[in-house]
Image 1 (cartoon, rainbow, N blue to C red):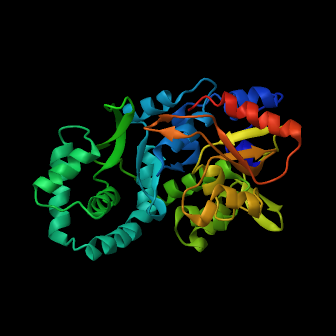
Image 2: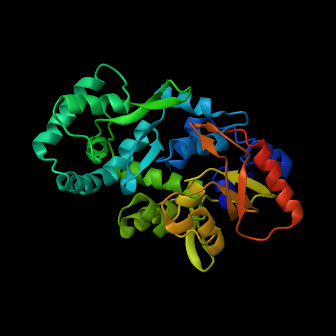
Image 3: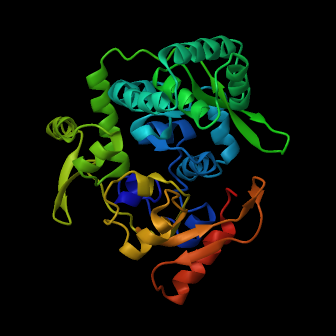
Length: 367
């Protein structure tokens, strides 16, 4: 059922027969009939982990309507409909401006304290942080700017940015809702760089109700999911998250089910995908990072293949019938593909399945 919830396959709620494995893999593994725009995808997911910009753009594209390209996802950022910023767990996420404000309302105060400790360890005091905020606000009032240009403006103002100082100042200002990443600009290398923007964040008039609604969407887009997974993802206390999800169950907005001996929540009326076959997902995908406990859909060997050496770099994933069976990657040099896809399976598969995976890799449309 998680494939359907995640927008990576069709299920009973979508109606009609599921596409063939070949048809599905030719579009990168996603549901070719979901019909969602990139903004609708992200709003449904609430937020998607985005420290690897290249990967999250593709994670959005594969969940969008057939034919959606990475350029279409970038265009949503260019229009201001999507943003990327520091949010939960000290990590960059892609969200809508409104949902980012809701999430910041839940986590920013605590995360700012954590970020401030890192700043003070680097010798950044309140006066320096205030000066950095003033310089950034004035610079961004003129329009979007490159990260390197903001760092240069700080350096010119006598604010040291080396040794990680610039990164932590940016994160601090992000939690203060003064900066975020938005539109893209061309670079000399033919790639596109995401620019920083300023401006006030949207107002959240009823924070608890807005957070409750966001948690319902989180559960619908990842169900079946445990309340403890939701609390870990949000980075807040389990008691409050459990209470929020139980209110949604009582209101009929979520259903409960016992899965592998654990109580989980999901969208009412959810059905498994009729067929699943082979699905490809990018690195750092919510298929993996939307849950603290990933053993529900991955064996220990598959977990090791996705996160080798536990180095914090989550590789792109190969899914077969809703189970993670290995990793894959396309070599990248200077921002562009440089070679054939490379596959690392963690589990033995029939030859026919391996051929399906190879066809899926050959047809991956988002290099």
